[in-house]
Length: 282
Ligand code: PDD
Image (cartoon, rainbow, N blue to C red; front, top):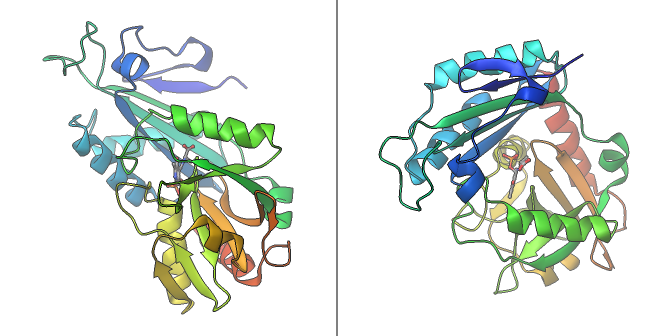
């Protein structure tokens, strides 16, 4: 079956889908994006994703390309046309096409691309847990904005791939873990406290992160939103990561150090099951 993409008002075959060579997303990474999970044909946490898109657009002063209600209609149509039952919707908005000049163009129209594809987190990864490596966080200081400027994330993820690891955690100059290249970072202390970094300009406030926090709150877990050092993570009894594409994934090793028993932790397992149940019930 051929894939279909949405580009600036039209549904086109994926292979023919294109934006202009002077699109500012292409030339300056002057654009933002969202990835929304589709589970059983339903969009997971659509509203929070749209809210975060609004935030990203506002922060870099790009207008909504179409109103949120129209985006919702396109999401459903792109999911339908690509027959996605379990997968993702990808949305990107750039400042548009303009004569190359760093300053904002006077008259550019934001460019909108939306795609959908089938995929699901790997069962072995979810069941057995994964290894992460670490690297200095070399990104800019506003990673709370979900921009397409992801080169440091790409390079860090490639380090992980080369090391045979699933993800790379980035560590700030204070020695604190910020987040993964495309995932948020969590640890569980030996006091059974669930610890994840507080939202700030230094992390992307993941939508999965927010949903998992709500689930943990309802389950009466002790939650502490604060920075944690790499050393603290190495000594944690459990660790895991969250994202739209991975959901909840246990971490069993960080760099060369085994975490806890070197197997997925009990609290992680519980949150993973609860999150799965949440998406399955949508
Ligand atoms: N990445 N941190 C970063 C740097 C991310 O890029 C992402 C998501 C997350 C998790 O956010 P959420 O739970 O809203 O997916 C954290 C997406 C999936 C990506 O770039 O493919």
